Image (tube, rainbow, N blue to C red):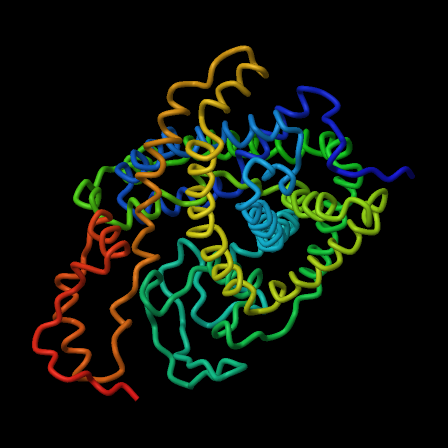
Length: 459
């Protein structure tokens, strides 16, 4: 088989390219994270904030990334010839994609296990007669159950002899559906510090998905384009099917109205705006093959001579490495690891990269050059909303992360006397950019320290 580099391979058709963009834009966040965040953060107001930021921030940056990458014909490493000082952004994007691919794999493995169990004659989540069910399990529609009070002991449940009759839905009962999720799918342990056993079936699932992903990108976009007809279009079809089915259920209208009900008291909460500026505004694809591809392209562009015509060995090495790194997700603490990585991988790191991209596109390379590039490519000027949003609107929204760059309340002197003086002087420490510029230039007009006396001994 002739090996090719991902850098020089082109899409075989415009349709495959469009399908790839669809797969890049619609994925798992639309299935679970966005509905969860909407429900948690006030319903309607959150959706308003989400759509607004998607229109004025997410889509313009999406357009620029796509347009400039197509214009230059470069991968995530050589693309940053546009600003070599910030070439690390390309590496960061590739690393986040690789971590997301590892994290996403276990989520898809959980879904696959549900799919496999759905073919059983008796659905296992509809009863309490399975070996994973506890004495607190109850079936939907039952009125009472016999529940043994229990306590968790490092590895097993120890049941006392006290029998208590309780009503399903109380703090002491667990729905059979929830028990299937917790004790059959997740086999959840007591905490992230309790790794527990590794599941052989999920190891098989992870290996199979990694193998399929590797085969899909063995010829880069030439082979990936064919796979995307399924992996990109199937989620869209599933979303429509689930949506239509949900609308036919009893109480669907009431549920949707409750979900979208406007709690405007929470509109101005900082959390709504912070969560609205989540990675879904800057979509990262959830197709494993696409997530892996940028990481391969980074390596091929960084080491073109060493890796020329060695795509298969490189792909094999990367796939094996990602499979091994993903094995902890198949343990009983896998869900804890998943949630930890999911939150810290694609939140503030993505925001920082987007902020840097805005500065590069609008003020370093310049929107005037981007306008020229777009006219050369499309024979039309850069859209006004993209130009204004990139130069002015996005930086304003994204600078809400500035508090992460400031010192915290825990940054205090070790000496107690110095701490009192420090806190008192902080009241006059909020300089404007003009004041800080003047102090850096002249050393005049610094922070006033009252009642300092002799210097405070710190050592």
